[in-house]
Image (tube, rainbow, N blue to C red; front, side, top):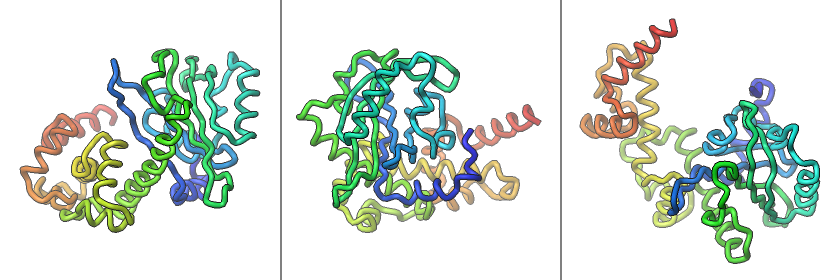
Length: 282
């Protein structure tokens, strides 16, 4: 695992970059859901961020790859000629599509289908690369996934998608870092005003990138906060309603309903399960 203790400056830089393009998960309307890994690097190809699907496909978490290069996925059977093509395209700073043999964390090889776009700032200076990758071993047909297609008709929509991804990353980071989810009265309008956008576009971005409406998206942060508090001995004398209020829920019934929807357990069942796991690992 990457030792973040020695890379704190780089990690902070990654979090602060406004150019980060974050796309969590794409579920397209075809025969099955497709995991689409997204990798954001800086201009030197060092990884700044990866989405959850990257972890699903490769086995590597974000903390394990931040500051490293995507070449960490290459191995013994990775074709050197393919790597040469990738390097030439990257050096030319042009969008390209290819296939390469990569390796998961557990050593298993797989066919990686990838599309990479260079990203430039207003002065036309290269600032990032963003890669969209599919597991071609499990999903050989990528024709139903627009972001895996480099045809001209998709390039404009891909760039629009990157702008939406930037906004989604700013929203997610702001909510988490400033703990805005603790505010029971947090609204779409207040968030849109803070992010200097309109409510309709922000709502569309949240729906597209998280697969949830804004309220459900915010409640995910609240549930995670509640889970942490319920496992903290400092809160042993607090009622579940009291914890719910601390986490931004307006009332007890909403808390119980949302918690069960997101975890599959009632708050009491979660506490019992957590205590049982703690005893088993003791």
